[in-house]
Image (tube, rainbow, N blue to C red; front, side, top):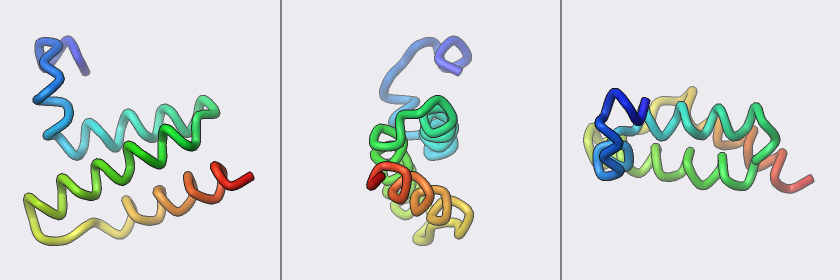
Length: 70
């Protein structure tokens, strides 16, 4: 993904789908706290862009929060 976006961090941090992919990867590899942060960043970006957050994104953030609380 970083290669596709020319390694430009500002593009990644402004792409809610990119942030969601990063968060899902973190969650799958056992980093729930980091995943939760990135899911929250993704939610903030998409809410800013569209005015709402997809329900699947909030449900993944809830899963990450539950894992982080363990």
